[in-house]
Length: 217
Image (tube, rainbow, N blue to C red):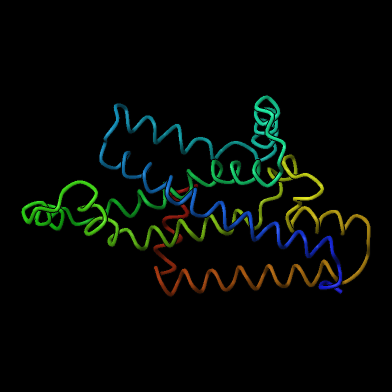
């Protein structure tokens, strides 16, 4: 029944596209932002970190309404574009905080050795810093993925009828029909969450990932 429902199948497609677009945008932005903050490359980097983290305390409804007003002012009408920008902005603090927690454990002697061997600038970052950030990158990736797939409170303000994501379509289905389709979707989403936790625990270590998540919130 799920596969025969064109609205739900289209919402799954929209959710996948949203994830594909959001993850690289947010991950690259968070890597650059975390590096700037961790290495104090801008004045008042600590203040910028506090301001960035404080956005996590805003209710999703407030964020959704604010972004809807901004997109209306900018005349951005495509729902998928609006949600991609919104999720990239919303997930950025979580991803940055996960990476900053990883930065605290970097070995500075490796970077000094790389500089002595002539690796400077982006080459040093790519060869020495980025490999050490693998746990933080994986944690940030999972946070972005989960929030992008699962978000309702922000995206419900930004989606149009052609770009509804799975949570929005499921909510509308639940209000209109009384059938097992919603239960099937809930089981699939629960299975996805369990799988992601398993992957995170295997690659990063569950205790470390939960510590980074607590730092992010």
